[in-house]
Amino acid sequence: MPEPFMERLFEAAAPPLLTQARVVALARGSQQWVRDLNRWANGSVVEMSLSVTLSVAELAEALAGSAEPTLVVLDAENSEAVAAVRRLHGAPVRILGVATLPLNREPEGLDALVRFPFSPEAIAQQLDALPMPSRPEGGGRLEEPHGPHPSHNPDTRGMVSGITGARGAGSSTLAMATAQVLAGGGSVVLADMGAESSLAMYHDLDPASPSLGDLARAAGRGALSAKQLHGCCVPALSRGYTLLAGARRQEETGPLVPAAVAGVVWGLSQNFDHVLIDLDSAWIGADGAPSAAETALGLCDKIAVVADASLHGVHGSLRILERLLDSGLAPERIALCMNRTPRAPLGRRSSAQREIAEFAAEAVRVRHPGHRPPRIFSVQEQRGVEGAHEEVGRLPGAIGQELASWLLEGKGDAPAVTSEMRSDRGGRRRRRGAPW
Image (tube, rainbow, N blue to C red; front, side, top):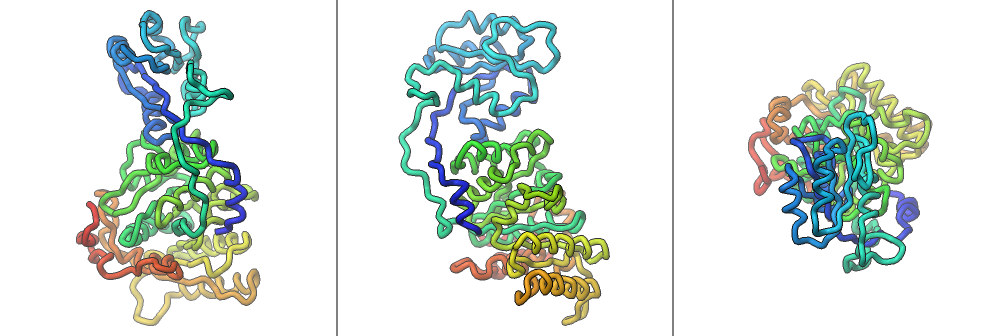
């Protein structure tokens, strides 16, 4: 990992820890803006404590006897509720109306109005506007006692690895299986940086759960805390690793700028033993300029390019390899994985494997003379994969064993991939001590 680059990104002092501002939402049933607020609060995207009430009576009870300034969020069309909140005595409140439909006139009694959908920054601005008698000069909420922020020390970070491949090559399945094997030797986070966020689908995640976009937005405001990182990640208990879901909506991709993505990757590496990034190749060099995806790949210690045995799969993976080599990555940091290969006689390679080996060696000879060509692995077709996806259960361990071993090579005291970390061929027997 190029530490000088990261030092420049994080040379500014980390922001102080802040107290959580109080927010009370008055909702009519399950509304999308309420789910967004809940996601941002749970993932610490916005530092706030959120309470959801379903009636003015509940809201009055939540505010009774409290002197803490509170942001009340409700439907802008609910004029009766606005008037009722204004009649309440107790904590100073700021009323934020959410307009989900076009309004004929500006509602009365509101301190501010936002139109749905809105961003976390809109809520943060309203929190900053809350009356805070003890607020220090210069703005900002009250600081908590805190020590110095941990230095971004490369000796204390976990390994960062990337997996990418041509569409349909099975890179996401290989990433999940590899993360499952790596989880036998330490804490592992699997980060989805794909264009379609397929890992959220494979893990049957709630659409309201935090995602990469939320974490990148927080990273754009400063160094991430452990609470923010773990708040946006979901444990995949049956497989032993932790998942960071990808951006699932168009508005979530806006924060995915190179500096914010670098902050996310670096923060994850400070909190997990191994960071595994599943990256859609469509994001690599799509516009001819350095992208957030290429930034993430540039921070990887090792990168695996996945291909299937078809002609399209072989040539697609070679194009990705060429782009990686052109970006300056050393061939020794790259491996090629032939996925779902049919069983062949011992010691023999298929024609697709021979072709990809020859082209890879030529690509390295032209771009990096004197370097060894990338390692080439073969992952045979395994039974039970679709069933494991449907049940979000353990994947056949044989899928990710060889790649996991390569990723751990040269990692000092990294644990070896042993038989105790492997499941049987059907993927139904768990590793000793692994959570379900």
